[in-house]
Image (cartoon, rainbow, N blue to C red):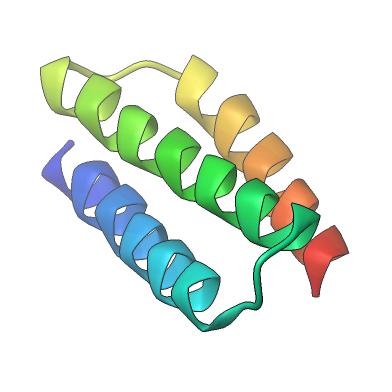
Length: 68
């Protein structure tokens, strides 16, 4: 399941980099929350396989798409 961990970490890094380039405001805060969600998902995925990660990931990804 290390692939899931790597993917979640990559999404977290991308979200953090995107948040760093944003001006201060609500969208920047939301982008940082999304990065935290991806980071927590990577930690949970490291402990073992769990299909609940997929629904959480899709919800975070959907929220991130609304910010663009």
